Structure formats: structure tokens, C-alpha cells
Image (tube, rainbow over all chains, first blue to last red; front, side, top):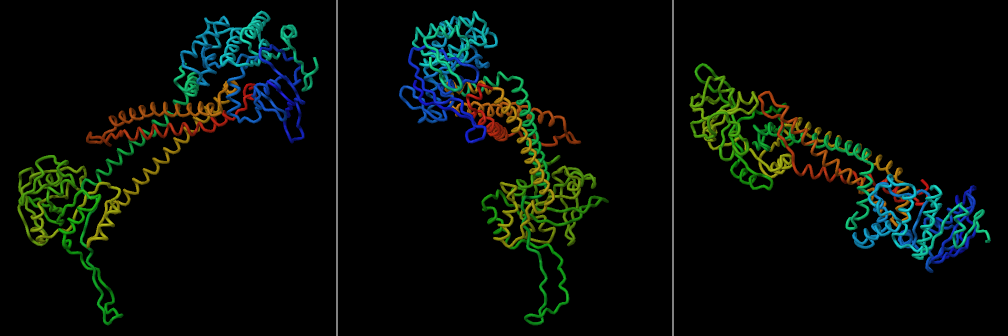
Length: 223
Length: 408
């Protein structure tokens, strides 16, 4: 993924117009394990939303595998997002009406990606890989925070996305669970070659990453 | 979770199931609305059929009569009328001109089921010391009784009419102290009289009619009233009772007769039916509206409650169209589920009410009309109402910005 001159403003044309991102250039490569750090209000979440194709920049371009996403309409962006990018949020954001297994199956069901048996087998495999084979039939409310977050990671991996964006994935976990989740993502990165971009305030965790991107006042500060 | 079922359906059902209490309350609301509609519609249809039956029991849907006899002014010259006043002539009993031709022509008209000639007049029926003024209807049983269903209202005897036979109302027979098989003397104003044997007694459910109506053979009436070969009316039965006025006008335009439909002769009653239908339609519309707003309100709340879920679904590749369909399906399912239960409750309530409310004589107040078509239309309309009322919340959900939605 290549970001070129990304700017993002709000309240455009109004007296209260404000620019959050001031021309960001960034490259993300397959197999990287990156930490994104910065103070609150530095623009981390805005940048993450743009990288995740949840938001569009006011100016600049986001290229994925050489495709300029500015040229894509909403449904093409949605499709691309579903296939190429997985999300892990600070709060697990599992959908409470479904079991853990169904949450993991969901991206594949939405995409109608394969037969029911194959989808179920892959979801069970992912849960097993997370050490959660036993919670498949549980509703999210019956799982611990660490388990919920690992289910969310399994869901993010369901479509074999090449990029996982994790917005403070360990922010709500105790230190033991946080270490487990982080180590687990690191392991997946090594085993599957999936690129992880992790927003964190935890310097100790960030230092375990391949690269640390630091943001301040809407711009990336030099390493 | 089965991939054979579209994800929108799975999500819609799961969301409804998860919000059980909310879902139960809105289904209860729809159920009450639909039950009221079903109950009222079926009840009013039944009452209407009953009223129609009563009105059309003793009179035809269209009656053809001879044209009015009009006095012509006497002219002194081309432009000068000599008379000071033109007196309205008395309406003598006259025959419909060429009634056989008229009857045959009318019988062949589209929408006409049957046409029966009758000879109507007044007479005095006496038996011993008792006498009563009656209306004598001379009829051909084979063509007349399918129109005015006297055989259905016979309490005694049979509906045959030989030349020396008469069928009377039960109250008239009581007043005369006559029973089945007795003879009565029937005398017309012209002075003609005939002795007839009572072969049947009927009860039309109307005391006035039961006291004053009698049926004899057409030839007997013609002879009694001194109108050999004549008929004073042709009674017409048609397929659609509500088309009576239109058909009457067509018949009058094409034949030398005056045509009176039951709608014109029972104008007040017909207006009452129309008013009843209008009020029923209004009630249905308002109940439908309240159901629609109920569904919309619940789904709007649901969209707000589920905004994070919507955001996550959008993040994992769910399109705006799929989000839209999830909420539309919820609206449709709520409407359909409420309508199914509502139809059962409404029909059950009507069956119970039908068994509870009876006429003074113990007979039913109205026929139980639970037509399949009414249920199909109700189910269809409720589902469409559910879909339509879900449109605004569904559009709102589909337009949610995923970033804002996830942030909540």
C-alpha cells in the first residue's frame, strides 16, 4: 500500500474548517509489523481510517496493489476493503447477535466466499489457531476480554486480508492478556506474512515491532 | 449460519431475535391492528350481506314497469294550450307493452341472470268473517322463485302454484285463521273473485310483508285482475347487485319500460352501505398508518442501537445495499408475522362474537364470512406496509458513515 500526499480536512468551506492530516506519504509492505504511535489528536485514527478505506482523503492518493482507490466507487471500495483489509478495534466489536464462530464466519458469508462447510471449517481453524476452539458456540457476552479480542483478530483474518489494521487492540486488556494478544498477532505476521499496522500508546509493545511510525500534529515525524 | 441463505436474511432474523422484547411488542401492536382490520372487515361484510339479503328477499334487483301514463295538454292552435291545468291521470293497471319481447331481450343482456314476468295487484282475501287487503303477485314459479327465493322461506307446504293455489305469509294466515290446505276467497277491486287453496306458508322475517303478501299463478292473477295476457312488472336478477343502477339505465334506454334498480328504490339504505364501506376503509387506513409508524419507530431505534454493528459490518465488506436490505427484511418480517397472528386472532374473535351474538329468534345476526382472499390481501398489505415503513430507517442505516458508526 502506498499513500501519497494524504490530506484530510473537516468542515470544508466553513469558518471552522480544520486540516487533520497535512500531506502524509507512507508505504506499507507485505509481511511488515508496524506500530503507529502519537499523542491523542495527532491524527492516528484518521490516518488509520483512510488506510482502511473507511474514509476518503480530502487530497492525495491511496494506492493498493497499484490501484488508485480514488477512482473506485463506493461498492468497489467496499469490496476491496472486505477482501484486502481486516480490522481489529480497541473494543472487540463482535456482533452480539451471533456466536464467536459465526462472527468469524461473517466476512466470508457476507462475501459468499465458498460453501457453508468450507467457511465453517476455515472459521473453526482460525478459532483453533487462536486457542479458542472451545468458545465457538459462545455469545460474545460469555467470553473474557482477551478471548473476545482474539475472536476479533480471527474475524479480521477470515478473508485472508493482506493488511490488518489494529486500533489499540490491547487498550482494554490487562497486561497479561495484552501480551498474549500482541504475541499472537506477531506470530500470525510471521506465519502468514500478513502486514499488521498497530496503533498503540504502549512503547514497550511498539518496540517489539519492525518499525515505529510516529505522528505529531497530523504529520509523520522523522524516525 | 448457512451460506445458502443470503446474509441479509440471517442478520435480519438474528437482530429481531436478539431484541426479543422490542420485537414482541411491535408484533403485538401489528397483531392488534391486523386483528381489528380482519374482525371489522369480516363483520361488516357479513352484516352487509345480511342486509342485502333482507332487502333483496322480497324485491328484485331490477324491476321493469310500464311507462307512466301521461295526460297530454289540449292545444287550441299550434302554440296555444287550451287547458288551464293539466291533471295528472290516475295510473291504471296496464301491461308492459310487448312484455315477452322485452323479457327475452333483457334476459340475454350481459350480467342478467334471469327475468320473470309478474302481474301485481290488490285484492281482498276473506275466510269466514275475516278479511284482509293483500298484494297479489301472479308469478311463474320456475322463473320467479330463483329471483325471489320464496321456497327458502317456506315454513309449511310447498312452492308450487297451480291455477287454484295460493301461497300466503304466516301472519296473514294467522289473521285469517287459515292453515295449510284451507281455502280462501280472493276478490279483486274489479269484482272478480276466485277460491284458492293454501299450498304454502312463508316467513320473510318481516311482519309487514308476512301480513300482506300473497303469491298465485300468473294466469290466476291475470284473470282475477281482469288483465288477460298482461304483466305489470318484469323482475330481473343480475350477477353483480352493485351494477343494478347502471344496468337499469341501459334497459330503460333500450326498451319501452321504466326500470327501477334496488339501489334507486332503497337509496337511503344504499347510502348507508356506502357510508359503512367508507368508514371501514378509513378505519383500515388509520390502523394501517399506526402500524406503519409503529414499525418505523422500532426500526429507527434499532438502527441507532445497532450503529456500531452496522459500522463493523460495513468495515468487513457489507455493502450499503446489504445493510438496506437487512432493515427492509426486518420491516417485512415484522409486518408478515404480525399479520399472520393478527389474522388468526381476528378470525378467532369473529367466530367467538358470531356464536355469542344472535337475533331474538336465535338465528345468526350475520353470516360468518372469512374469505381466503381477505386474508391473502391482509397478509400482503401488512408485509408491504412493513417494507414501506422500514424504508426510512433502512436508508438511514445504509447511509451511515462507517467511521461515525463505529465511533458510535
